[in-house]
Image 1: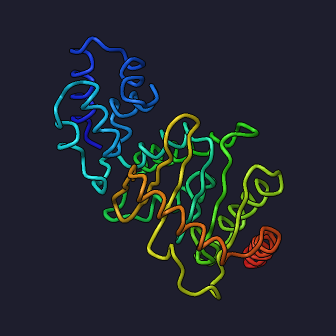
Image 2: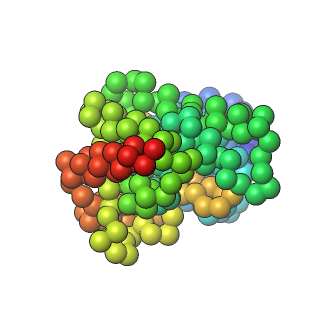
Length: 264
C-alpha cells in the first residue's frame, strides 16, 4: 500500500502543531486509527477523510485524494500479518488452502513452493518463516478469537502429499479441540455460495473500525470502506449458514485425516 497519503497527513498534522491524540479528538476518531493511516496500514473512510480535512483546515484535499479502496496492496502478505497481530476477532474463509494462520510448516512450504517461476530454497525458507509468524497470534490463549470457514475443497486438495495433509488436519483438530479455534466446513453439497470467488478475512479491533482482506493470484486487497465491509460480513454469514455444525465439521476433519493416514 503506498504511504504517500499517510505521509502527507502526518506532515499536515505536524504543520498544524497537533499530536495524533489532538487530531483524533478534533476529527472524532481514535489515536490508533490516525497512527495506522499515517503508517499506510489503513485507508480512512470518506467520512473520516472529510472530518480530517475539517480538523486540519485542508479544504477537501484529503477527501479528493483518498486512495482507491480496491487498489492492490504492494506487500500484501506483510500487511495482512500486521493486521492479524492487532486484531481481537478474525473470521477466515478459505476456498483452496488452509488459512495461513492455521498452517503447519510442511503445509506452508508446499503451498509456497507451488509457484512460477519456481522460488529458490532460500527465498522459500524466508517466506515460510514469515507465514508461520501468523500462527504466533494463537499462542495467546484467548485473543484473537479465530473462526475458520473452510470449503470442502481445502480438505480434498492434496498439498504436499498424504502425510502433510494428515498432519495439517490433525493440527487444526488440536486447535479446535482445545477451544482455541472454531472451524466449520462448507460441504460440496452446499453448491454455489456467497464466497465462491476467493479467500476472505474479516478482522475486528479493540479501538478502530473492522476491515476485510481479500487475496487472489499475486495480489491482496485491504478493504476499509464500512459499506463494503458490511456487505462482506453478510456474505460470510450467509456462507456460514450453509456450513456443517462444529461437531459435524470436526467429525469430517477427523475422518479425512484418517483417510490420508491410511494412504501412507
